[in-house]
Amino acid sequence: MSTETLNHVVTELSPAERQRKAELLSTLVEHIDITSFDARPIIDGMSKMSFTSRDLARATAIYNQMLQDPDCTIFLVIAGSTSAGGCMDLYAELVRNNMVDGIVATGASIVDMDFFEGLGHKHYQALEVPDDDTLRSLLIDRIYDTYIDEEALQQTDHTIGEIANTLEPRGYSSREFIREMGKYLVEHGKKDNSLVKLAYEHDVPIFCPAFVDSSAGFGLVKHQVDRAKAGQPYMMLDAIADFRELTEIKIKAGTTGLLMIGGGVPKNFIQDTVVCAEILGHHDVEVHKYAVQITVADVRDGACSSSTLQEAASWGKVNTGIEQMVFAEAGSVMPLLASDAYHRGHWKTRAKRAWGKLFA
Image 1 (cartoon, one colour):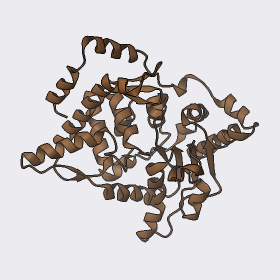
Image 2 (tube, one colour; image 1 turned 30 degrees about the vertical axis):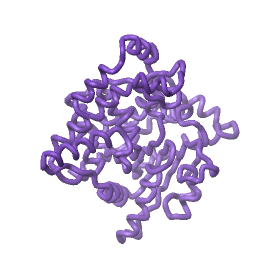
Image 3 (cartoon, one colour; image 1 turned 120 degrees about the vertical axis):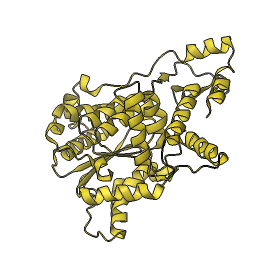
Image 4 (spheres, helix red, strand yellow; image 1 turned 90 degrees about the vertical axis):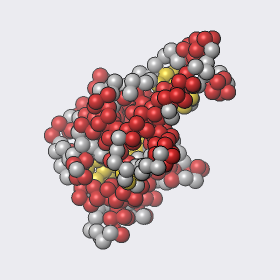
């Protein structure tokens, strides 16, 4: 979106509307700090309970097994809005402390949430929810009980377009483009604890198989339209390169573990690397040895988010022996799992994989 269009949007609101918008965007979402509390006693206690508590304790134990296994590459897989809801610093801490080696996520998690805050924008608690038409008139977007300033989001779209404008006109995997976003945040960002920025600094590759299903899409469309009007070539995203690169990591990594929040495309994408490796002739490729999925989806939604890890074993994707489904809202349980793993400290002796250097 051009600067002229952004300025037009900014001047649309009257002083009274500006004041009302400021009232609604007055309470920040504060992201939880897993280093500030020790969840080990809670998880230990939950292991002696039943139902979801025991499932969470077992999932946490499996994640700790991944961290302890010297041969295991760990993928963090994110779908949904937990980043906007308060888990953003949690995910960043996993990267900072070498607790994950690769990330597969939705474009919204990476662009609309993390990169957005990396540029200095914020998410807000919706302490009241007027009708959504009113929110639209005030240029406020809503995710459940969380608000996003649409004007700030459009500035993010514009920044994505600016990054694209600096690149050689050719095909890029989402990993390659997100690395450019991380580089941009190192130079221009306003937040140290950004997942995109830290992943760039630690050579942790981030893949978004549906990257344009986010604010990145608007900025990249504008980049292509502007370049086409000027008779100039433009950059493109190569979804096949995404699949090829991620499969290449899987082949070279050998033993792998999955920590999955939600489901959908990111979940299928990382699981399918096993099948893709076999198609490429690597019949000795290991299924994902460890797998944890935290989700509220069940079979009633009829979608890939509800397919269990046991079901994935029938496709030759995961090991049925070391897996755990946790049916819970991830924002309520991930802080406990991550804090437990952080304070047990198995990450302190892990070798750094730096899979991003594979494509340097």
